Amino acid sequence: MISLLLVAGVLVAMFVAYNIGGSTTGPAFGPAVGADAISKPVAAALMGVFFFIGAWTLGRNVVTKLGTELVVDTSVFTLESSIAVLFFIGVALLVGNVFGVPASTSMTAVGAIAGLGLAGGVLDLAVMGQIVIWWVVSPIIGFWVSLVIGRYFYARLNGMVAMERSTGPLFDVDRSGPVPIPRVHRTTNRRELGGTFTVVAIGCLMAFSSGTSNIANAVAPLVGSGELAMNPAIAFGGLAVTVGAFTIARRTLETMGSDITELPLTAAIVVAAVSSTLVVFLSALGIPASFVIIATMSIVGLGWGRATRPMTAPELVAGDGGAPVTVNALAADEEGETLPPIGKEDIEDIPSPGALFNPVTTARVVLMQNVVPAIATVGSYLTFRFVPIFGF
Image (cartoon, rainbow, N blue to C red):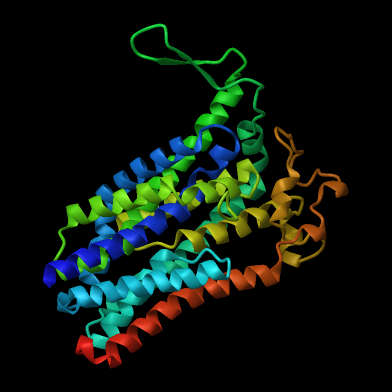
């Protein structure tokens, strides 16, 4: 009976990881696929490889935090309770998908485990407090870093990164020898090659950061139960993510998957780089980070920085003049555009009020990103507290 439960637990964990692979491959490699830099199968392969590297290295820190440190008594992680926790994670994420909001997998997983800990009276409030503090601080850091980049460096970055694809392929394959050798196509220019390398490298960084943080969301309860060791758990999770990347991620790659990849290429790179770096940093500390929320605030910060670029410091302090804050102002920069120095722009260059990010939409996203983890927390607590089978 125990072996059957273990098999069921592994299958449920792999199902969660499968959905992680499907939902995160698009945001990671959407810009690269959209720019015809790489194909969908190559994107899926890179997602699987770099997710596994992130999970195998820094990801075990987060697995340990969720599976053994968030609760003071790991005996609450029975196979039955572990499967139930994973169930609540899956259901809560489904609610977010129904409403079209990219919910935070990490916050949802922590919420489900916290509900179990509360029901059993074994939740470590100090560890929970540490996690919550970083959840508040990290989006603020992402916002301000992106704001500074948007205000002072975005135009220069746009001139460096923006690229126009040539008519031919990036590479030709020389099959004259025993081993096929890729060679740069004659129409491929240096700028195009550099831009391609940049978007693919950023995608690999995002995949790596996803592995460092998201592997715990799928396997931490089973590792905490002591029924599944760390290494095979990471291997099962990485395999399921790869399968998800090759199957259900194809649609998210086509649609670019999220608000991040719907941005102009330069903005997508900035948001991805800032968010991924913060997630990797938090994963090194063992903190399950919310990439979705950090990225959302990074988008807002980048748009705010672009919109306020024409304003001087006294105007900002006094609140006089200046354009409203805009996210779509990011799209105002054409590829390779060179902008005048701050304060020297014509009034026509100031982003239009109609380009504002929609406050209603922003509020809905932020609300659902908190409601989804709350559903997991409350559902988990009520189930473990009042359903007799769990004995809490």
